[in-house]
Length: 254
Image (cartoon, rainbow, N blue to C red; front, side, top):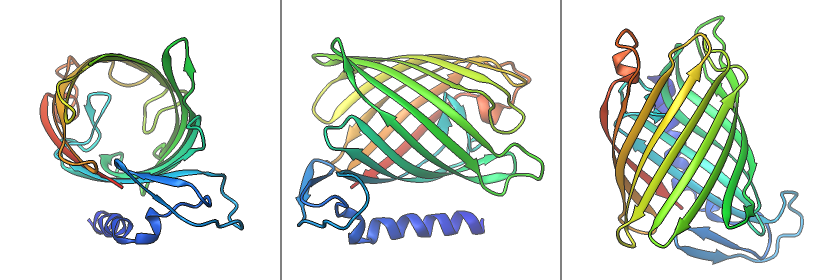
């Protein structure tokens, strides 16, 4: 509980700090939701030119690959993302509350690139994750590799995702996740998506998962998401982790 309160205080401090909304790259426009802000030249900074974005979120259940990382409990999260000029390269870091392997806080750092090819949007990334204060002897860190292929035609959109890790956190060994997602933009503020995926795990549960829901943009900074999750995991697996759930989440980006 102490770590959770400290994380919430840190996330609140990020939102309240005006310095974090400024660029670290000289005379460049920083995207904040749908707006922008330009700052003067700052030639002595070492970080490459680009834009920064920050977000904070919370929800009734922390779902990843359709399974719960918080065993059905609410969560909070925060992230900082940098995108290079031209939008090809990006990097960032994040934190979220979990309930896994004795840990209630997960940190991550990632780097990636998002080129276009033959009309498709590609997103290739590598992520390093750490579970803080995990049980003694538990495998508390892992690598995660992700490849997304997306395309939008009119109001319709689709994405195919492949993820893998050579050695998952905890007792899980190598795993893979393949997911197909379809989306439809109903209005400028309302979008629906549905997805189905398959996860194969060494020394853990193999399952097919699916989700469907809607995202409503209340403003250029604030999104609300309502989504149904379920899996076909073996009945002997944890119901809190693999069972069905209706999840509500909110995300504030600036």
